[in-house]
Length: 118
Image (cartoon, rainbow, N blue to C red; front, side):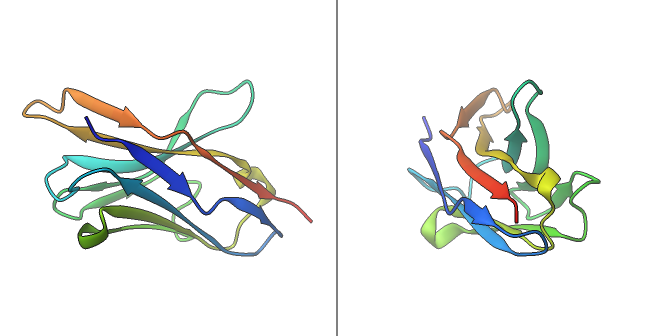
């Protein structure tokens, strides 16, 4: 089991930047992928960005060019750098990990609130 803890959320003005972090309980180098999702009240959780074990990345169209996902294996940490933030980026951001021979295992963090408002 991989335990995930997010941190770094908060209040930021439109156009500002924020970096959130996801600390894993063990090594992340062998995980199939780690990702960031977000959710607002009444809506389904949506994919924001993922990074695969070979460092290939995917982004939602709504954040391409503004957000960057990265990993630091030595610290078992994945980051989401968010620039040019918009009010519609306001959400609870969740970290996700997937592993296993058939990617059959998954774990979620508790979430961190990001609020973009003036």
